[in-house]
Image (cartoon, rainbow, N blue to C red; front, side, top):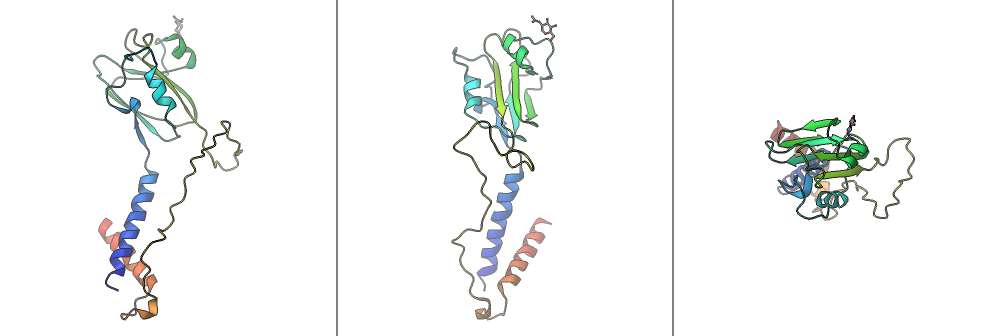
Length: 191
Ligand SMILES: *[C@@H]1O[C@H](CO)[C@@H](O)[C@H](O)[C@H]1NC(C)=O
């Protein structure tokens, strides 16, 4: 049984790590790299292309990196986004390392607060899809996505080395005890 406890402990640690990671919000760097928040080099709207290639969820956190001396991030209405009207933003950020949680589904519109940058194409909009599996919510997704990214629950790996049947263990330790010891070991390790 010398190997069972370490193996089970490892499995438990892995499962703990996985579930922990799943509960953490995603930090998403706008544009995929730092200094992406700028007037696009080409006329193609690269930040919107980037946004279209991403799937945003409620709870995700957008991160903008930029030089706070020359730029800022304004969250605006759809109308102000389209007309590049920066006079009354919904929110404005100018710390150079802006983090914004997507706390509801729907459309978000951002423009640069630097003079003329929005007109030159430094703007981005994105859509956060409604959450699925909302209790009581209608299950009909309005987008008809074929590739529904269902989060499959973490199941124990099928290839886990099967512990010897409990009654074969010389020490009389059964599987339940091993699990318990693993849990205790993890508890001690994390204390
Ligand atoms: C910009 O928006 C403000 C308030 O929303 C409005 O008063 C102003 O007329 C707008 N400016 C332009 C150029 O549309």
